[in-house]
Length: 370
Ligand code: GTP
Ligand code: MG
Image (tube, rainbow, N blue to C red):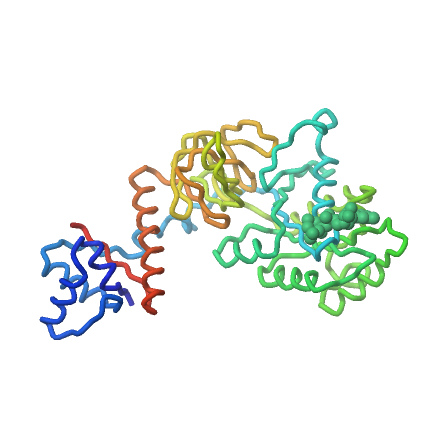
């Protein structure tokens, strides 16, 4: 049910809390300032005090922002988005670095490749693959908790000399919960004490049955250090992507997810955004969480300016008024007024939730117009 604390109600009307309490008392209700009242009571109180009331439902603001199924009739293939997970020190970062370097043309190798938290590489068959470079399990869980499904494939890195460890199991569970297929990369096979067979049979205990054990989970033995089988890994990812038949409509206003965001001294708020549907363009009006802005510039993972970014394309977005949060969903909206409406509503909702938590009750959806 819609509720509001007396304090918040008073704040919105710029009235004193004590006056609200007195008014309620006259109507036979005894309350403290931290008490929660329902929206109908709040409306009566507000009108009694000479305010006009506009009640806003969540659906008025959020509906149509993300879910507009009928619109997605023009679906075209999009690159897979891959997250690398695995136990501490099993070689996630080394593998990502090796993949990226193997893909950077030699002239660029010594140059400055900007770190934007996500990047695209090209598989041997020419298919682009997007890697998300924030493989922390906490980040993955946080994004899922916010309803952001960004990953299509999880590459599970297991060190051949160490085997299945607690965070390996955690990663398996994360991938399962998100219903994302796993590709097993048995890493460090260059090591003399590598036991890839042991890894395979250990994985069986967690119901991950790789192909060589008669299962369907794709697998590859790699060495990030010696750069062994990196192409094979990319091929498997491209193959898995084909099986998933990933599609998205590029011809619609962009939607995506904030992978990371920060306040840059020179450039202001900078957000790495993974575009998931539609195409984002310079000049677009965007909202993410309670932040909004107009896209001033888009940069790809090499730091080069681009004018647009389509599905599965990671870009740095300049132009937000403030830094959004990682995991926030991004949408392009039609006007600044609409952007303001959404962000103001979300700001208020955030405050209400905090207030209601303080008062131990549900959220409020009552807006006061003076
Ligand atoms: P965290 O981020 O701490 O969870 O670790 P990580 O999984 O990113 O592992 P990282 O890439 O930092 O590698 C851990 C150690 O393993 C480093 O000393 C790497 O040099 C080493 N290492 C990674 N891959 C290989 C490999 O293929 N062979 C060998 N011999 N060593 C490797
Ligand atoms: Mg690492």
